[in-house]
Length: 191
Length: 191
Picture 1 (spheres, rainbow over the protein chains, first blue to last red):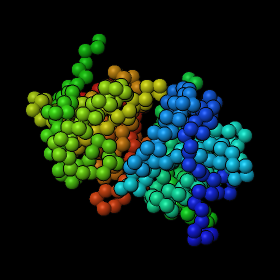
Picture 2: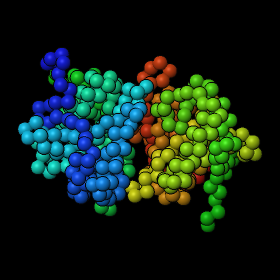
Picture 3: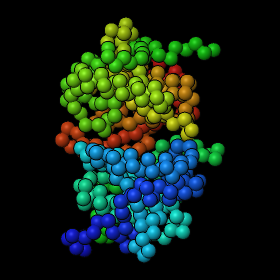
Picture 4: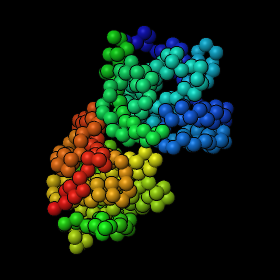
């Protein structure tokens, strides 16, 4: 199942996960948010714009989390250490052994290249091997077929959908719930 | 005509909550280890009257500031007893989706008419006052009495998060029930 006993859990085959540097990375987040497609895949709230300064404040606030109920990582390419997106684990519920994952690839040149699957696999491994969680949750919008495919590849299963819970461009879309149990993730890795 | 009472069931009333006055009741409910909090995935713990007052105060302050949550005290018709707390935990205005929560004073109360009457009032409030498109409500799989009422009122099981909850020494599924406005029949649940 695991190739070596003490592997670097933050490192995948195409990307690695690093700490967010709020000051340095905030301008990237601000630039990515101006891509409406990116923003509409990330959040069901009405898309809006934040300055680099506002992004920095928000990222700093995330890092002040004393109780550790979540963590954000930058996604960087192994090839040239370029920051291309982020992943996050939020809403960790320790007694339930669960958390919510999220991912965004801001740099368009790196979509559909396997970086998202790689980063999500690293994040899931961190959640299960280091934090000892039992399951991961995620929400994905029914128009985000690319992401659904990635999640299924990792082992996530569709656990249901809220019909017509999203309203965008005059059309209604479903909010899909997916879940990944710890044993499913590891079975999927070895399969 | 717009004269249908919004807050009156046959045997119950939905009323404002008062953090100070209602704190002793909430504190008393939480001394029973079987009590299910508003957010069904929160770990149970008993609250002192002061802690209960703060919990209610925080809830009401957030409702006042954010304007996307609404809370009601569910009382007997003579308003002498608080039977539960219900409300809208998230009004997603741009998408027209609402999530409601309901926490009754003890397990037996979910099987009594107060629960069904309160949910019928919430359906009416969400669809005819907030004009939402979809209403969702989560229930732990172990709250069989609540699930029975939801099914009776016409809610459909839309999501089943497998093994998402840990309580009473084992893992349980978390169920999300929902109803579209188009599937709601006015007057359902009315006595």
